Structures are given as structure tokens and as C-alpha cells.
Length: 397
Length: 101
Image 1: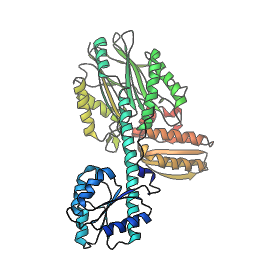
Image 2: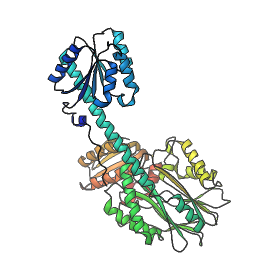
Image 3: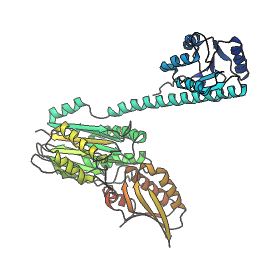
Image 4: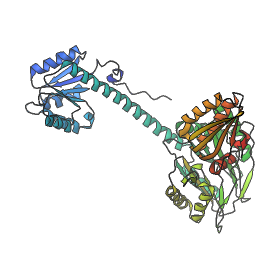
């Protein structure tokens, strides 16, 4: 998919040559105007328009679309100060360079001109070399600023689009409700990339036999590179739906495929598991993911699982262990990305034991209330400087 | 992250200090460059003064291993403690890079 690039302003090219720049000369004295016109002409500027006073200049702005204004101060009807004030009040002309050329030469005149929004000031009588040099400097600056603004705006809108695409990789609230109705398992999720795009994502799949597969992925690094990898892995997880009921085999298969795709040094951690409501067990396998936590009504603290295992994408022969945790009716399962345990605490980090203590504090809160209370505690603990995903799965029956 | 090197016999030891994260990319690239030029057969990263490593930091250690092995030398991670040791253990990095206490 390609987005048409915005048409470059005539000045975008002109960072090299400024000959297409449009200059508006404002002066009540015709002789002065002609002098400036000739001077600009000699300097290579051919698109020059004249105005006789401030009001005349303002009336011409829309049609002429100047790149720079050469402005006299003392003029009948509307003077240069007044005109500059009017100009700056209009957001479209906020950054238009206004170069004052005036015989008013006291420091207070200059100060007043700058206070109403002038960009620069040259004194009459005009020194032609100096005037042209200043005109060129301001035009060049404007062209560079425009290039930068265009680039910045494009990057912003592309990132916003990419972010909404990434959010759509995640299960929608409707699908979560369907799962709750069908299986009696409620899922509450929090997803917060540390920049516009993140390297985290999660997914779930209802298996035909009434079990629920769930996984959480965290790519190394964050930002655009990590986010692109989440799209790859999401597609892969869809293709591998058939083995999603077997966590260790699922991870080994994903790993083998990722090894051929990722450059060395990039990897992902992943926890893949299956909730079996009949058996009352959470079966899982882990590729260096954080330790899953489970607790049942009446428990004082969560029980921690084992997250150890080779990260995905490093060694194609890697094998993973099937592990399990009890998950009886009413039980909860909490999964999270490592941002939650890497929050600095003194010279150490919060770590899994610290997180488990916070989880214990809120263990009896329901769904959303649990997540928001826990997240508030985490934010109070210290700065979170990585993508943070947190999932709470509750067995309602 | 900061580092200091020391050479002895057929080993070069580089001691890392502070936090190893995504922000240290340029520094670690320079360090890998130095290790490739070092004379010692064993290039030892002493992690005993390293307080924290994130996933990008682990990625950079893996890149270091890849590039150092390509110059027929060995990379060893030594003396990790605290969070760094826990992360290396959970990710089973010992299967890829020799780890010494």
C-alpha cells in the first residue's frame, strides 16, 4: 500500500535554489518599491509583488501566498507595526518571515517591531548585499522548516495508522464477551505501548473441545521494528491454529519459523497456554516469558509458574517444556509483559516477587477493578519505560 | 552502561557497569569492535557490576557472541548477579553463551 506523498511546495526544491520564492514588498514610497524590486531582480528573485500600505498588503496575502515580506514601518493608513500584528494573529502566517526595512532606527523602534512579530530588521539606507543575504537566509530557513514539518506530519499520521492496525490485531471486546458467554472465562486486558507502536501483543483462541488457548508475546526492543515483528508473528499464530492446543509444540513450531525470519540479536519471549475448565488446569509452555500467576478464591497470594525457556528466534532446534498450574472454578490467571517487573526500585527492580505482593493486595477485586488498582500501584512504584501488557483471565464457573 | 578492559595471558576481561539497555547500542557496538581486535582467545564479559539488563541488552549480548565467534574467539559471560542473573537464567542464555559464576 502506498500513500501519495503530499505535493512538494515550490520551496521544497528551493532549499538549493531560491529563484521560485515569492516576495511581497510593502512600502508607501514608489521609488523605494522600485529600488527594492530592482535589487531583488538582480538577486535572482522574479516573483515579486508590491503593496502600498499595510491594508493593501493584507488584502494581497491570500492570492499571492508570499514566502517572505519586506516591510516598511512608516506608512499611511495602516503602518508596518499594525500590519505585522494583524498578520501574526492569523495562524496561516505565524511563521512567515517578515523582514523590516525602515529608516526608523532607534533601539526602541527595533524592539517594538520584534515585539509585534517581525523576523528581522535592516536599516535604510539599504545595503543591497546585506538585504539579499538576509532574504536568502530567511527563505532557506523557511524551506527547511517546511520540509521538516511535512516530514513530521507524515510520520505522525503513518504511526497513528499503524497503531490502529496494531490494536486491531488484539481480540475485540465483542469477541471477549462471546468467550465469556461460551466458556465462562472472563478476560480483562490492558495494552499500553511505551511509544506509538509496541512490541507486545496477545491473542486467544477457543478450541473445539471447550478449552481456551491464550498467548502473550513480547518482542525485544520496542518501537517500529518490534511492532513490525508483531504483525509477522500474529500471522504465524493464525496459521498454526491447529497446534495451539499443545503449548510446547506450538512454541517449538513458532520458534523454528521465527529463526528463519529474524536477524540475529532480535527475538521474542512468549507464553503459550491452554485453560482446561474440565480438568481445572492451566497448561502452558514458556519461551523466557514472565512467570504466570494463578490464585483461587480464599488464597492469600498467587502461585507463580516457571517462565524459563529459550527466547523465540535464537536457536531453531530449541525445545520447550509443558508445565501446568491449578485453575479451579473461580480461579484467576494473570499474565503480563516484563515491563511490569522491570520497574526500578532503588538499585534493583520490582521483579516477580514484588509484583506478586502487589497482586496479592488486590487479589479479590473483579476484572477491570483488579487491573486498574494493580496498574495504579505499578505507576506509583516507578517509571514504566517499556510496552506494558497485562491480562487477567477469570473462571466465572 | 560503562566498561573497562583488562588483559591477562590469553584472556581479555571487560567489566560492564550500570544498566545495559537499548540506549547503549552505540557503546556496545564499539565494545564488540574492540573485542574482535583483542588478542586473547577468551573474551570475558564480567557482569558482576551490571545492575540491569533489558531484552534489547540481551539481544546485544547475542550479537556480540555471534561476531566474536566469527573471529574464532570465545565469548564468556561471568559473574552475573541479581536481576541480570535472573534474566539470563529465565532465557536459558547458557545454552547459547558459556556462563561462569
